Structure formats: C-alpha cells, structure tokens
Length: 356
Image (cartoon, rainbow, N blue to C red; front, side, top):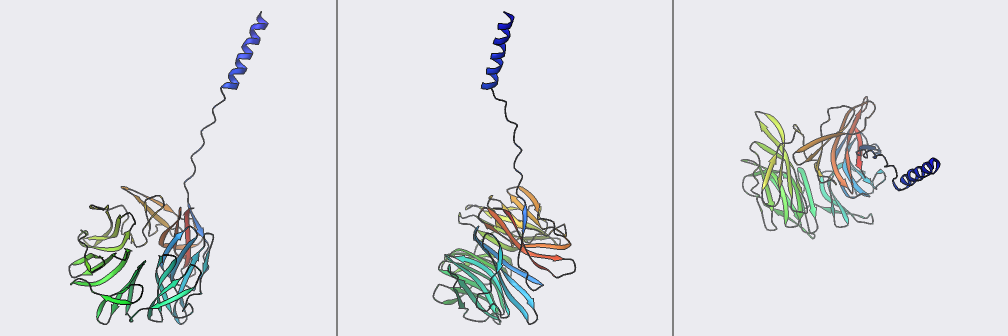
C-alpha cells in the first residue's frame, strides 16, 4: 500500500512538471544605441563644414571647403549608407571657391557654389549628371540658399546692400523686403509660396515670410534682445526657431515652437549653444550638436518637451577638440558631420552615426 501511494505521488509530481514549466528569467533591456565613429577621407586642413543633408538612409551629402596653397577649395562628400567618399565630379571642383547649403529638390540634389567669386547653383540628377545655374549677378556675400520644387532663393549683399535673388525654374528676379530690413541671416522654405527668412532690422531681429506674392513681417513674438540662428519647417506645419537671448550681456539659448495655433518659448539647459545644426530626429525629439565639455569626445543634446538629455560620441585618441557642426536624419539614424583636431595637427573631418 505504501508502495502504491509513493507511485501515485511521483506521477502527480511528474505531471505537474510537464504542465507547469519553469518561468524563463526576465531578459535584460536592450542597451541604448550609442554614437559610432565613421571614417571620412581626409581633406587639406584646416577645413570648414558648411552643411549636411540626407534623403534617406542610403544618401547624404556634406559640403564645405578646405585650405590649399592658392586659397579655398570646395569639398563635397557623399554617404551611400555604408561609407563616406569624396565627390570631385562637379563643375569647378578643382577651382578656388566653396560649397554652402545643400538641398534635395525632387530627385535632384542642389547646392550653393561660390566659384572663384561667382555664385551659381549646382544641380545633380539622380543619374549623377551635373548642371550649373549661374546667378544673375555677383554678390559680395552669399549668405544662404533655399530650394523647393518650383522655387529657389539666394540671399546676400552687393555694393547697394541687401539682395534676395529668386529663381522660378526658368529665370531670376530680385525681390524686395519690408522697410527697415538691413540684412538676412538665413532663409528656408517649405513650398514655393511658403518661405521664411530671419533678418536683422532697425528694431532688432525679425522673422519674414514669403507668401508667393511678397515678403512680409511674420509677426513672430521673438524674445527681446535676441537673435535667430535657424528656423526648422516641418511638413506637418510645425515650426521650430532656435536662437540666443541676451540678458546683461550673457547669452542663453531659446527654442520657439509653433503648433499651428500659438507660439511657445522654452529655455532648455543648453547654455549658449548655437542651434544652426538642429534637426528633428527619428524619435520625434529635437537634436543639436553641442560645444563639448570633453576635449576627446563630441557632445549632443536631445530636447523632448521639457526634458533635455545629453550623449557623447566615442572617445578619440589624442583629440583636443571634437566639434560636430551639422546633424541630419538619415532614415532611422542620425548622422553628424564636423571636425576633429588631433594633437599636433590641424582640424580635419569627422562623422558619427547614432542608430540605423
């Protein structure tokens, strides 16, 4: 009898083991993605980075200029999703000059080119064919450039003052600005009838808007005693403006956001960060390259509502200054492009990627 009872107990225990498997231990959370260094073919130092733009994970372009014995020479780099390479196929690649703002227009890539003092827009087709569109006049200063399907603008100065040059796809015209505008610091556009520019005027900084007919005061309530570094236009209609406000001679960064109905101004803990390289990341947050507090690492800020966090790039041996200048979204990743100065040498190019 005792033997039968023991057999039954053993069978019950065995069945329980089959129908009630041991719970698997909870898996550890996946580590957060970190910035990774990307190799960039060296240029002739010292180098200056102008702009960075991506169409998706497999195409990005970075512009700027390098220092050669006869002066400045333009430089253009392409990201193909795997590696950076230098492109020297564009007209004037071996001549004095520089490359500025880069934009994607339809299937083409457009970039502002100062070619030995003469301004032009370079257009690269999807098949790699280049075409140059000369500007209608020479400017002393080529300050900025914006392009969308059906329109492009170049802003700068000549010996008579401020100039806004407008291209409608077939020819150029000169556009006037409201009275009191002294200088346009930058320009961007969402469509041919929706462009924004930030200006220095007789009464301070102002946002101007082009509505397809004229440039007008945008009526943006900028903080007093402030300037504007950049304006980020998004397809949804959201607008983000970044700049600096000065109080008793001390600058602090502000961000203004327009949600389609009202403006909201915030002062995230960014010090006096220059916001020109600000982008909307794949995670929906704003990302900015920062002035680093570590000589051997880059630094980035992520602003998501009222929360600001910081991340660092990989450590670079013997670096004394790592300066990411521009950021862009490349699919599910962020790309940065800037300069790194290694002890004993002049600043050269660097690039980093987060995610993807």
